[in-house]
Length: 557
Image (tube, rainbow, N blue to C red; front, top):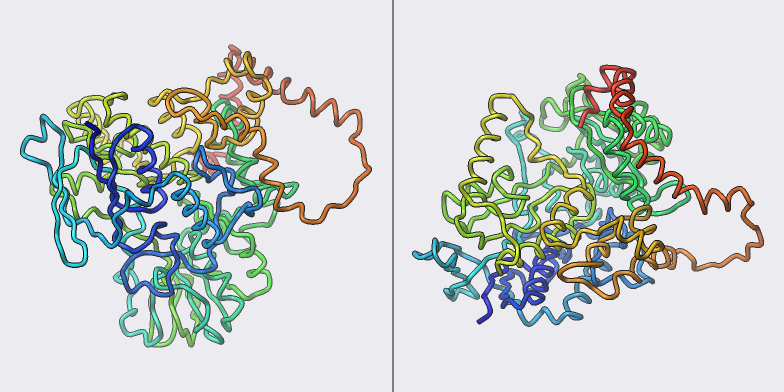
């Protein structure tokens, strides 16, 4: 008899969880409180239902080849970065292709998820749901929580003295949908994440003036890199990951700082990171231009509000503010879980590999998608789901709960005593995390073996973009189309760009041809030699000594 699995939420991670259950011959039932799939990617005109949705103008930050399901590439005519409508269409195509919709119960809210009395033996859960006022209860062998971390708007009004006497409009970015209604107004946007940058840029086209307030500053990166290629395809590569393991992180970040300031000087634009604050990045192609043109004005953090103005920490005052938009993020919660499990799941430190609560004696509840990553969230949640379903079936093992709790508790104490830093909220390295999960499943690419068996494929896997197809080359869930998907990924990336073909008779020079043919192998051999060299430690120490101390402290990862 197939194990029954409850999947809570039919967004990006919920859809992949349903499919992974089917791949492992499990029996999924998905509960979705709205009337459609897609989660926050399903645009609605208002947020009256309390659900977080994207604003109409949203464009993806990670290109299509880096953010697709591992056995379902985007169509080649889809743009590399797409608006919410096209991305939602992709989710619909995925659901229809794998026939997932019949497993989803729409307009159904999960009221409670509680352990059964014999949980220590069976690992089963009682799940109570409500559909149109009628409650139902069912027993499930496992539960996959796919509600994400954009649930409740974080609105820290207590941090802004005078906000309650401010007479203008105040709203959280969850309520923002379109720029209409802000024409001719003076708008203050508080918070400089991806949403804050997007909202400020869009409003700058209609508002009289936009002010963008930030406490920390940020690095602004573009969607395209040198040559116009999608930046994520150029940056997230295994060869770069190897370099990052060999060279000191402060040195690499110093190089990165110089490269980003080469595009434009962040200090001149009021965007540089405040001293002592953690480095962060946003993806925005237009913000620097808006600042240059004066349609967006950068400001420090807000000290207090009056009835019509905002006073900033640097003493400056902006009068006649009409609207304040808080892009201050979200908090996540699990209202359907019982205590103490609910509180424990709120601490990422107590989630084994960001998926399994450490306290459960039976690993039959998985948190999917509660993760910050320097790469595609979609690809990572799919791999989380692949691993979780195999744990449910007993095909993958995790350490005993006593050991996991002891390790997490010890780490928590060290953090409280200041011995180590709390990195649980930091974004994880994409390739390292994906490889970690893949190793648990048995799907991590074996690079040396690939170079022996299939040099052309190995070349693309190691030197090319680390796309999700790589985790379908071998092991459980192997996909016969993975090799071809990797070898044709650049064709799909360039196809939507080449809508006007210009004949070009230019030929690459002999030197360029030689560099193309031999550059990568020589580079690989060089790095392998360096990696094994007895002089490696000496080189690292000397490089570390040459980096200015203030840079080393700011940029240390």
